[in-house]
Image (cartoon, rainbow, N blue to C red; front, side, top):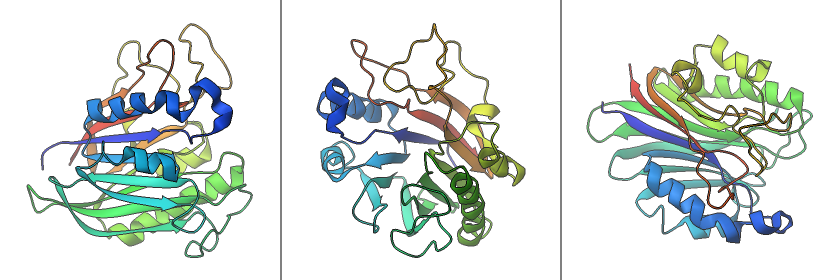
Length: 262
């Protein structure tokens, strides 16, 4: 199978409180990132209905699965986009990060909000290869929820993938040395950033709160976005840190990887 370009991007909800970092001022930059990356697989987090509508033209060549965390439709969405001319969709679905993952809007453990996972099972049109792609956004407050969400996601991947190669992307709201992240590494996953030597000048944080400055260290800035692989090898990894007149497309840097099934 030919290499696959994967993108994970928390695009930040269109909150009015963001003022000049609001969606209206930066959406064209988000569109530019999506066009520039031209990924075959995209996982977006924090997508609101307005943003989903705005993204329609830019992502017209993709099959889209946009899953709202409140009931599967409404609320902040975890969204997957798959290039139609590259892959066939064999199956798709979603579940909540909670003790009752099939219950609509269920909030797990010590989480503040409902959190959700979307997934697709894909077949490469260029080969008989089948694999799975999962996208999620873990809770920003609940430490127990993040840890248990990792356990649940790993279990669900095993059930759904039935041994197929798998990609898991998202905003995990967890630093690299936390158990939330270690659980993936201890269960046979590789993390694309670790698997590929960082490029010179590449940011060391993925969350920057619209205030990234490579010359200073700020504890509020941290690495919390990941691309995990199982049955794939990483050929390239990048942090997309473009800005226009000091404005970034989001409060997270988009991350991308080029991967190939082993």
